[in-house]
Length: 242
Image: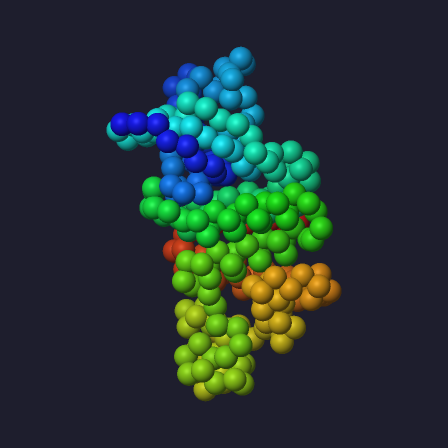
């Protein structure tokens, strides 16, 4: 039992009793933490909006038996202020938070790279310099790469051949004509190029892409992500309506 400090991004909250909340946070050093914020739902709570989703916060916590307790919270970056004002950004950001929660399964296992990716993704989303869905797809691809599930995009996922023909989720990415399984998607070459640009952070190429290739890219990435997570991302249903 003791105090510790960390910084993190609030992923989600849920009510506990009449005035408390359980807050799930992806932290920089500790990993994913579920902690109780006592009295946060009261009008005069000292935490106020500091423990709302999308907020990058500096925390002091007290270790508990099952759930830690948040004793101090200071806002570092209120990304939610910019994100919630725009529907497209809000739905994309919600999908990012949900995916971060799903990808970092175990609690209190350090996940520094996932944390940095999430902070970077939210910062980019809040800045509004790129289409929200492109930011979301870039975040998905990079998070999958950090987790060890990066799709093959430049050579066949099964045999390594350079002449790729289709995209097979179960095979791990692009495949050649010989390795192509039944039912594999056959995306446009520009769609695969967009996926490569998003994974590499080539925003000039990504921003110049056509809407039809963005739509095809988003569909493949969403399917690939959910197949590897073995769980649907509910927030994507709202993103896809934008």
